[in-house]
Picture 1 (tube, helix red, strand yellow):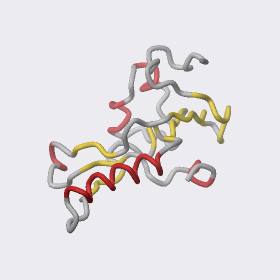
Picture 2: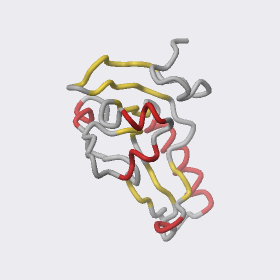
Picture 3: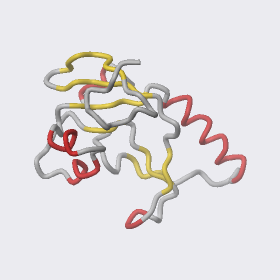
Length: 127
């Protein structure tokens, strides 16, 4: 298994570099354990949040999401890396199936992209 570029990021859920560069951004893939996260705090009116990526290609200096980077090096490199969730469609299908078994008449309220931009340039490659 290749060591992730960012030391201390995640050895339990390894990343793999899938394309050295997409513009100025290094793109990594990762298999997610889940896609839906229970919504809390100011978005608690929703059932879940869904973030299709970790990181962001835009790297806006005013963005609060950089503070949620996994470690200081990745926070410093905000805008230079993105991790997409390779198995997102399969995981989401399973999670929604579980939801609808328990709540057959109520669709979940999902807050999209609370800590990443949902429409990044790499979306043209990895949908």
